[in-house]
Length: 294
Image (cartoon, rainbow, N blue to C red; front, side, top):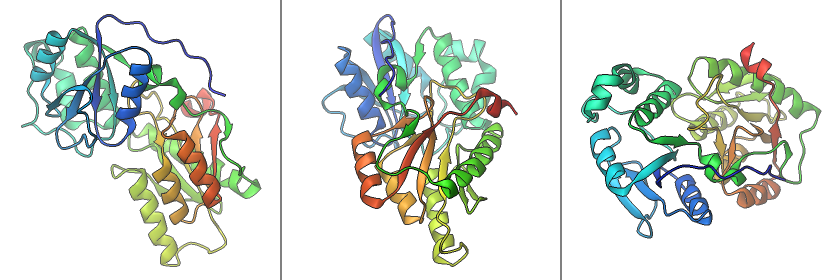
């Protein structure tokens, strides 16, 4: 059962910066359930959902000037960032405000050259310098948070637990470098790390290794996704959805483990149904802060 999380308190209207996938829609629907009327900032060339039922505008990924004009016009006091982004902003995308130029030049540089977490921290810093509160998607939609323990019918066995332990240590090390959030271990050996291409592409690589006979046929393996060390928790929490389950199955894996309380399960009902249908486990891990710090 999900823990009870108090609804966040903020002044003004809620805005949602929407990237790819269904995640922003789930957050927008949860906001409506809380009696908010969210305004959608649909990122050009990224947002791929139908926002015709919401007040919305298409916006360039680095167009802070146009963004702030809408914020002032609509009385927006808080922002949630949700959804995937396939490319980083380039120098031609950045349209800053005078406030950003004067007070946050380092944040602007981080937008162009930082790792994922540095970029998200920079975006958060610039929004806050403009007086906009930044909320985590899980604060609006707490039911999306992953919980400790198994979600479906299957549970990890002894071999799976060894793979979980190996992939957990790899994901922690990877997170310290601000590269990715996921790792795959097969037979107690780490065989894939998530890079900029994302989880699904990593799983496709694992499927390719298996098809080429590079992995032992009897060894299945596990995907682990964790928060990065010191990650900005208001953006880019690790997330899985039904496609993750299907792709893990295609890669020949036994299951998926995510960090309880610091990860998101999108379309939970379908995730459970697909995991049960395909014979995979999906489970939430408690990862001690000390493990992230070591």
